[in-house]
Length: 394
Image (cartoon, rainbow, N blue to C red; front, side):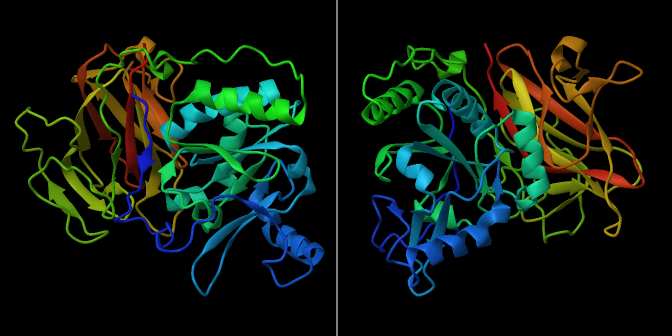
């Protein structure tokens, strides 16, 4: 199912006051900053250089201290000759990755004809602020176009955002023509790209509109029921299945899976000692099993997680996690092409290291399944879980 991740107006720390005047069009850097344009551009470029990948600084977000009003400025003359696609993403979120597959193809088709794609990486998770992790994701995904790291959410605020992903199409004067929150509307978006490019270059030959890259992107395709993503942590509305709740952050709670084998869809059931943080949960036991079971609908499973050291002074390396679906280890075809693998005794496992989106199961039969993750006994490391994503791949 096509998704958009809404952080919600009730708990959105990044959306500016809705009573403030909205800026419907983006502007070129000029009179609003109390310097000459050249001085302001140079200062902005120097201040933001370290936030850009694959490019020099092209735009900045500016939030006024007095009112909190936010503005977005083009600081490169290059943009006056381009149609600009701004895409707000976090590379650890599955809907963003699916949307990015279209931006990558549009860049391939139109990047030499005047389209400039800029990915704005506004991190949902604190760990996603790490530039090295962002650069690793850029390499993994093969992104050749500019990426700007928006850790202070200045760019996010400048367009009053609250969604991942979000695509905004601008002409060379900074006027917004298409604004899509979430996945979908790919055909309409590409048609608008072609229209604006032909305004820049009349008579420009354009290819036929891109066919859906996946069946679920086809508006005429009846997408099977697919479970919602699950986010963990005390600042999220985590649908825990256990009767016992978490208490304070980082306080260990001994859970017992009291489901008696009957699980609510989309509700994680924990077994063993776990602790919670604002964005995650992690197992705390040094010996024995620590596990989580979730009932879901889908053919593929993704896990946002990382290895966590049980000693806060140590750097985590790797933790092994057993993967069971419907009480069985996965067969080779169900892990092929994912981050999971079969170990020496042909059991499906994930070796989790750095925080990222791990693909842990694929080609499951459509319908309902039970996922169980068992953290291997390890005196030094445990698993820290931030989120689960599910999808149906036909």
